[in-house]
Image 1: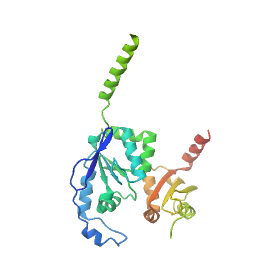
Image 2 (image 1 turned 30 degrees about the horizontal axis):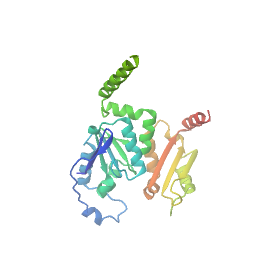
Image 3 (image 1 turned 90 degrees about the vertical axis):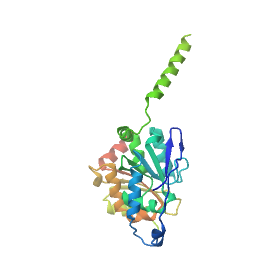
Image 4 (image 1 turned 90 degrees about the horizontal axis):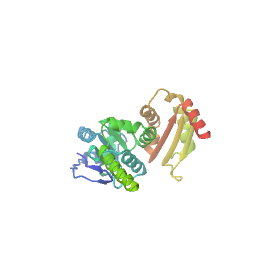
Length: 169
Length: 88
C-alpha cells in the first residue's frame, strides 16, 4: 500500500495511512533498462487508483509539491474545487516501486498523473488544457468529486442580503 | 548524447510527420527540459490523451532521458485557428 495525502478545502492535510515497501528485489535489478513491475506493485497501484474518485500521483505532497508540474496540477485541482474527501495524492518520491510502476501501469512517461474514477486522464499538460476548456470541471462534476456548492451559496446569499438590508437602513 | 532543441525538433518532424515544430529548451542548456508545440495532421480525430500518447510513444527514449517534457499539439486546422486568435 502506498501512503496517500488528502486535500482539505483550503489547504492540505496529510492523513495517516500505511506505507509498506518491498524494494529489495527491485533495487538489485536497478541497472536493467527495462524493468517490469511486480504483481505486488501492480496490485498496490490498483488499490491506490481505486482509493478515491480523484487520485493524483505526484512528486512531493499537496502541501509541498516537489516539482513545478505537480504544483501546477494541485493548484488546478484546488481551483476546480475538488472535495478533499474525494481526493487522494500519492508521493512517488517516497517509493521507487511506485515511481517506476505508475509509468508502466498507465503507459505514461511523466509525473504527475491524474485518475478520475479509476480512469487515467492525463498529465499536467492535459489537465491544464482541460481546465481551460472547461472539460475538467465537467469531468469532476460528473464524477461527483467537487465540494457541494449549496452551503457556500446560502452563506453568501445571507451575507449579501444582510449587507443590502444594512444598506437600505 | 544529450538532446538539443534542434535535434529534438528534427526527430519530432520525422517521426510525427509534423508540419510545424517549435521546441523550447527550458533547462537553461543542460538539455533536460523541453517544451514543444507540434502541428501535424496525424492528430486529426484523436482526443487529447490519444494525441499525447502518440507523441510519448514516438519520443519514448527521448522523454525517458530527460527530466521534464511538456507538449502542446494541434492539427493544421486547429493551428490556423490558434494563429488567427492570437493575431486577431
